[in-house]
Length: 122
Image (tube, rainbow, N blue to C red; front, side, top):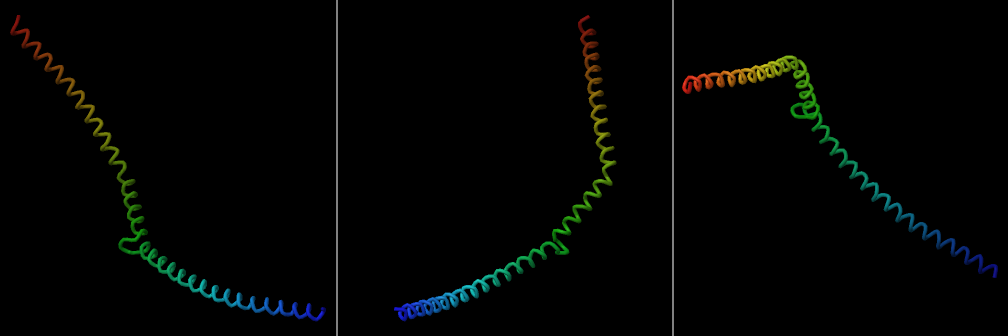
């Protein structure tokens, strides 16, 4: 019996080894396939990064140029802010003057109409 147990142990060991070799070969094949897929993905990412860099750093219409133009416009706005505020103050003063002139004209119209009515009926 000892002999058959030893033989069965050896047989089990051999079968396990061959199964492991088959699964190891399959795992290696799967790993190669995964590595190829990763390589393709990395190439795609590199292409996307290249197009992104072109969009960002394009000297004519890139994002960096747009930001610089916007910053220049904001700087110009800040430089002109005082004159704009003066224009707004002038506009408010003109509205106030117009309101006062309108009131004065209505008062004048009332006086003239009153004078005409007095001269016609008295």
